[in-house]
Amino acid sequence: MKNLLKFILRIHFLLLFVIIEVLSVSILVNNNNYHRISYLNFTSNISGEIYERINNFRLYLSLKNENDMLIEENSRLNNILQTAYRSDDIFFRSVNDSINKQKYYYTSARVINNSINKQHNFITLNKGSNDGIREEMAVVSKDGVVGIVKAVSKNYSTVISVINKDLRISARHKKSGYFGSAYWNGEKYNKAVLSDIPLHAQINIGDTIVTSGYSSIFPGELPIGYIASYNKKGGSFYEIEINLSVDFKKINVINVIDNVMKEEKIMLENEISNKQND
Image (tube, rainbow, N blue to C red; front, side, top):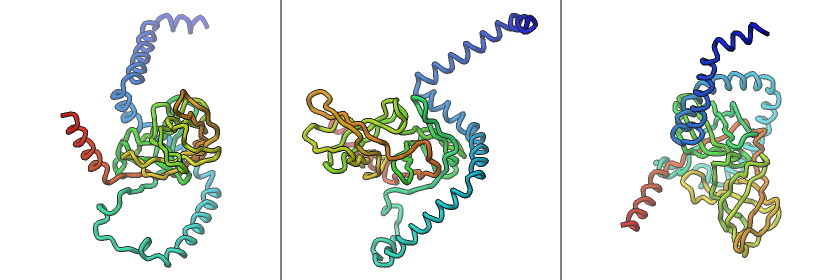
């Protein structure tokens, strides 16, 4: 014990320097969006390889469950194909220019790391820029909205999760059509809040909340959650608690969605905005 104390006293200036450096970098990253993104880009490739090795081991242990899920999925797809033959216009239509005809392009990926117990939760995927993944792409699972791609390296990408206090999603009460903003309040990992729905909207427990389709990131009608409770906030709007449709403790395989007409939409909206400001 005495030798340990002597050793610490001998290098205490070095230890103090390291502690100050770590605190300085932490403060810089947490309070500056540019440096936060740069840090995520730098660490995603290194941490991604570690997470992928751990995830591969977990997958090996859960191959039986994966095979059962694939069998069920194949059965479901076969059932869909049986009805597809009756609808040539939907499933077998020939499109010469698929880029201009298809608004969204889906790419599958696997979750190799995921946090749910922080105020700012992120997900790491096993695909990156080499696979066509870019920042600000939508991420969804078979159950609904998962998040938005935040940082990308060559082989990995980091997703800002729905259960991250920095993320807000344009959402709509499906039954009434009224839209508002869905966000996480930092409390339960399976619940979120929907704001700005007017009091004259007819809402009920269990009603579905979906994406509005107004953003250039998410397609419309994607499930976000279901109304768990609601109360009046101020004099004009409800504050609605929703049960998230995605179980963030169980997500494994997801889809990354690219809006191929995103740039055109943003350019047009910016042009109109600039004209109004002139």
